[in-house]
Image 1 (cartoon, rainbow, N blue to C red):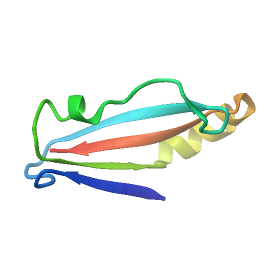
Image 2: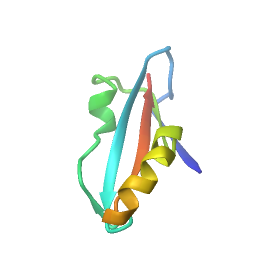
Image 3: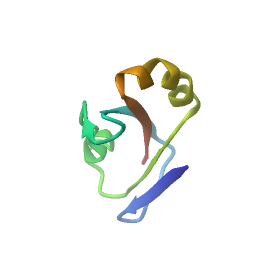
Length: 77
């Protein structure tokens, strides 16, 4: 499952930046803050994709006992 958003004209180049957002209490509270505009290096046109990646699925057995989950955030510029 993933979500896609476009800001401005969307991605116009080939740049890709990836970050991981962690949550506790099964997604109720964020552990860290991922800021897509900051990942886009100040550009005004980019696209954001959030979803569960392969690494997130590998981390789930280790994070679920602590009621934690993760999602991958990909910013394309």
